[in-house]
Length: 107
Length: 122
Image 1: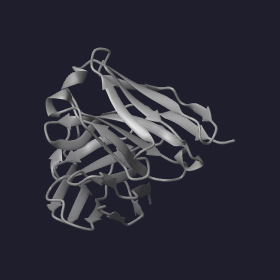
Image 2 (image 1 turned 60 degrees about the vertical axis):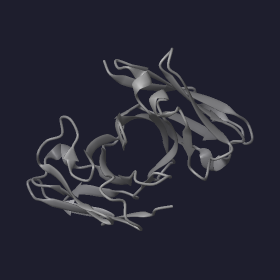
Image 3 (image 1 turned 45 degrees about the vertical axis):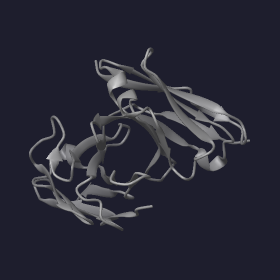
């Protein structure tokens, strides 16, 4: 099983600032990695797939990069609605596995 | 409206069975592979199981923690995916979500239901 590790666990950021979230896979997953946003009380929302492709309707301030084992989600200028928990997930191998999540909170 | 709605959750005793349904609307269900996920209280997201669309063979995949106990199936005529859960354990307590794969060989989930709570307790 591929272990996916996210860092940091919590990120404190001021509105308007940039947030950088990391995701590491225990073995290479090519670019078969997705990022999801989870707001309280809501279903997960797909932000990025294929490491860097924004899902339909996702604002351009969200960007993803990386391949192999190291991946990054960048939120260029945090808006109030972006304070949430973010999960990365690899879908290169079975079983599909998630990271433990990064909580982005207001500083 | 494009949506997924889970149903069938509730309180169940350890060792018993339960079947969840995921009813799809607003899109051609048979064209998509479907997944089940869960989130236990205070924990992160876990992938549970998966069923391919008929175009990709309709075969299934499972997490090790549920293999042999849980079964994913689908009925394309009614646009419903099922999760049959047998021999339930207390550690299966979670909110269960169904999700739609993006399509093709992209295993990201672009549409999620709101979830249904399963509590396994005596």
